[in-house]
Image (cartoon, rainbow, N blue to C red; front, side, top):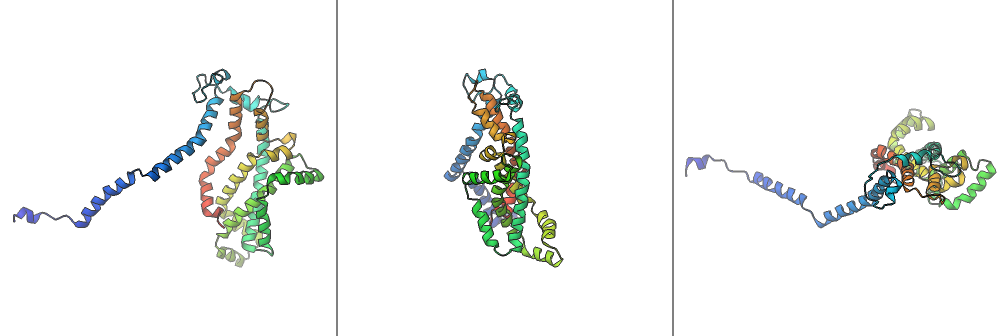
Length: 312
């Protein structure tokens, strides 16, 4: 046996096994299995289902009517124009007045802000009380509130009309805010109760030993910890209030009609020529606020859900 063969180091058995296993593992990961192909196909179909109508809306909203009449809804515009957007915002007729949907935008903002703050605040207080203080009959009260979340809105419209008319506030801004608060309170209570149930009870007991009362513990201990679930509740409530049509139509009154009601008046008009580009622009403008809210705070929404928003 030569000296070279004796001096040559022998390869380790484990190292050779690991080196051979790595390419095989990578090959297995890159291999397209039928299950993976099915998942990708489903995701592509779901994305196309939502993105294709949005693409058609965007393209149609920047085309002149002469180009729209020629057909080809998927074709890009040859004569790009923002005039339909200007007309939808400040010139289209939404009834007797032709001021665009900007008036409805202001009304929707005036409705959405208090209709979001009040249910979240009351729901946080209810969830805090039901989780830590647990007064007598707390489970019964929580069951009643939870049952209210499953009552159809249409069933409660006539009784609410009668009650608000007797109170003298029917057809006003306080009326529509009160209605949204009533219908949003059960879900908000459920969210905050489930969130606070995951907070360690020792934290509440420590605050009680330090002399904290109901409101002091709520303001100084619980609220600073509630940012993720507050974002979740705000997204849900703003989206529900902003996209509402039937409650705004019934309870808001003529001077406070939300954006969705005015959008319906624009699209379903039966006089004159139907302006599809203006209709598409008005629809996108109406949906901008919920879309922007999801894009800006989507990370907080996922974090709040993961932190216990739907746990019970």
